Image: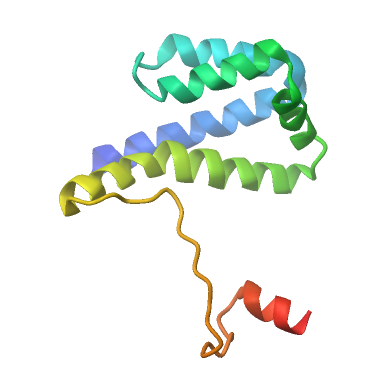
Length: 136
């Protein structure tokens, strides 16, 4: 990875962490404010569909909005790890990697891949969920 790309990723990561701290103060008030800021500073075509859907949820205060607010009932460490992995790593930073790989390889690169071990698996990998289910 080029030095400029590393610097961009570090800046995005630092900004994301600041946004999470801001949201923690009062999510119900600060989520719409942060969304308005994101809309101001990002290119119009950058995640346009996702931003519009998120804005609609915030404005309508429907059951999806209730789900977003329930995230703030989670343990703060779990919540921050979830945001870090799901929004920052997988979506914001990961989408560029996904798109670059798709262009380079000439194929669709899925957002997520689920691996399901067969009965031939010894289920001894670190963090194996299947082993936990089998011995559960």
